[in-house]
Length: 266
Ligand SMILES: [Zn+2]
Image 1 (cartoon, rainbow, N blue to C red):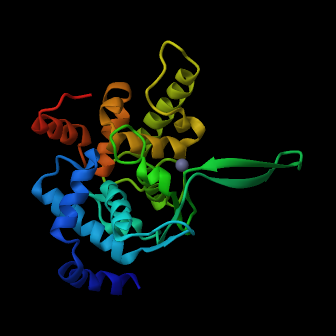
Image 2 (cartoon, rainbow, N blue to C red; image 1 turned 90 degrees about the vertical axis):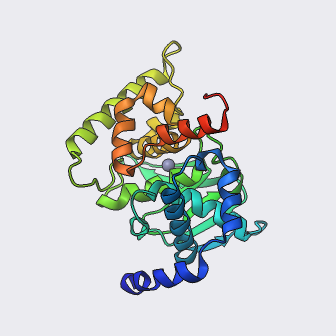
């Protein structure tokens, strides 16, 4: 299946590439999609085209799953794999859009065998091999350069699985040191957990990152693509490792884009 899909890709790109006007509109709509070189923009357009072609989209009742909504999801989902390739999402087959925040029910036995039940509100969800569920309201709230991005968050969870475990560490490239990754990420996780309780040294990073190692990686990835300057100033080693993994320098790219626009950096 994977082999056939790969064989078909050149034809998909020849026949179904996202039209140039649609593409220009997509890039102009969200500030996190600025500053690409011609080559990066071309690759992102190809990745988003393949994503639209290879993934199944479905929607809950009440959602108008337009081509534009699919494309908005596809382009933001492909931003993290701009320096990688579409095969990194081999374990991601389906996208489901629901209207807004939904409630998940959990049950878990404790050590004494007592079963605890609780509910959590979710804006997105990603199961191992199952669909990625995204809330439409949160998709609308993503891409604006404020550090929040439900599409990138759930995409990061998918990438986290690529080494076989959901633990905040994806399959690292050759030359990257897994021990350094674990050391830097666990040290920053501890630091952010401490700062969550501090009034004076409170971080700009959403404290949801301190829920677990995998949430830390997903939230740090949101900041990496949305608001990288928060990472470069608060956790530069996290920025450096994410830049090595994603093979992108988002801080430089977005700063250059702001300069071109003549706006002030924030
Ligand atoms: Zn998460």
